[in-house]
View 1 (cartoon, one colour):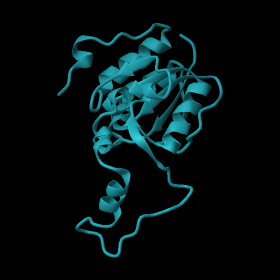
View 2 (cartoon, helix red, strand yellow; view 1 turned 90 degrees about the vertical axis):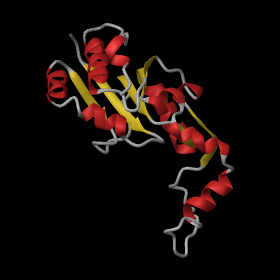
View 3 (cartoon, helix red, strand yellow; view 1 turned 180 degrees about the vertical axis):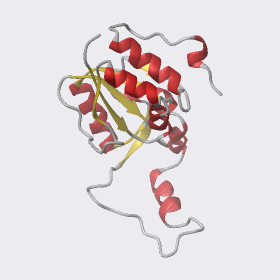
Length: 180
């Protein structure tokens, strides 16, 4: 078993996949003791993977120009890309936005919600611009591994990382693909 550098990003989603990642509990410590190195995650607030990262994990759908830049950077810097969870794998729930024109979406989100008082649509270069269509990760870059689920189980994530650490290509089947 060798070293395995892993980085993850969070695009348009709920962070449930990162919570499942943390739900590996002691098994995460086991993987780290066997050579897993986490070099960037939204959890650690280190958002840019090092060059030569082995596995880049993408959670969430690609919904903004910032997401698109981030997944392209992951592809550039990572040997393998893993789409984690239904949003990254299929586009998931965020693709429901594809049926609403962006001006209507922003109006509803920032102006006409029942709890909004004197709302205004924010504008800043720091806020990603909505793409015309929310996409799965593989609609933007080449994806090598897929772990579906909403969210995928900690067991499935553990299995994939353990297999990768041992130099094998993970193949999910049976209970690891079970939806609850």
